[in-house]
Length: 95
Image 1 (cartoon, rainbow, N blue to C red):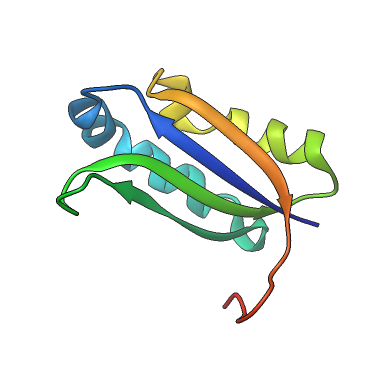
Image 2: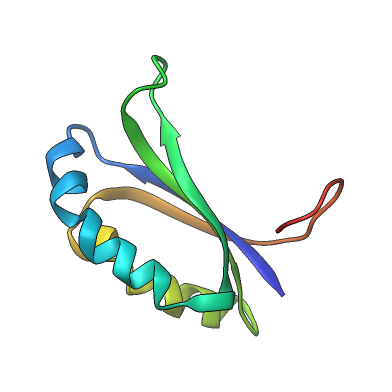
């Protein structure tokens, strides 16, 4: 089953995001095929990241939340909120 995680940063997290990025990239790569898509939300200028979106495959909501709890950005205290919801492709396709 697919799940989408919408993670919004606390204000002024740009330095924390940059410092944590290498650990996060390694964490993302470590999930292999379970990680379907990820990318940042950007501010109104389209320049600065202000959050993250991830689409993951997991057995159920609890498994998705457990996987996402290990996100180095979350562990660094960057996120003001994380919302995880079941999701499915409507029009278009992943990959």
